[in-house]
Length: 319
Image 1: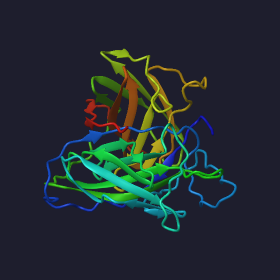
Image 2 (image 1 turned 90 degrees about the vertical axis):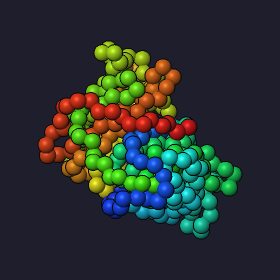
Image 3 (image 1 turned 30 degrees about the horizontal axis):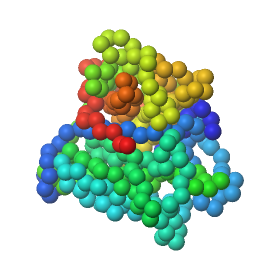
């Protein structure tokens, strides 16, 4: 597996406009979370029977995907399609094969068999969760979404098998409660998370690989002792505003391979599928805790603003 990068891109359906309420629940506030990075090539989506494993597209523009709840012989069965905002709920799902059987054998990717990402349609709330699997193949994890509205759930996994490849399947989730739409936070190259400042250098470009560097500081001083988290010093997810096209971006190099060292700069390579606004979520670990910084950038067109650092929202990390 290449140490350069692995990008998974998948798109979600365009968000519907929600009315004044989503049932019973609570108001609105941002939220964030984490997950393990998969260093290497971008995700490809071959059939389960594909013998040669297929090729990787390198830095080519990743195809939009993830709209499908079923793809290449596998389906995501989301058994908890609705939750109540502000209340903890056990989110449950199962991955099924072409015969409808629950998949119970997976390859471990960055210490986990499956990574679950939940994002609100307005890109204000974000969670990266690590569910546990029961013997019957049912995945479950507690989730507490603070805001009512529409969400997209993404399951990132690799079925067991010599030639198996990574898949990302998506399903819709609704959180009931009074709903109020929020605009996308303004573009900025800086973000703040739990007392840490994160500075972004570079920007994604449509159809072209580009390097993104993020520097973590605290109290005005660069943090030079970041800790590995799920196999890397940083984990970055980019979501395109509007349709939630999803880029799962990982750092260049990995701990222990001689190409990445603990320090304030975390380097990523990414290719945007199109121009537009993207919301970035960076997870990093320091002093034994995982922190998430979020900020907005633009691919193509006008450059990102460099205004006041924005807050990262309510952090919540999966286990």
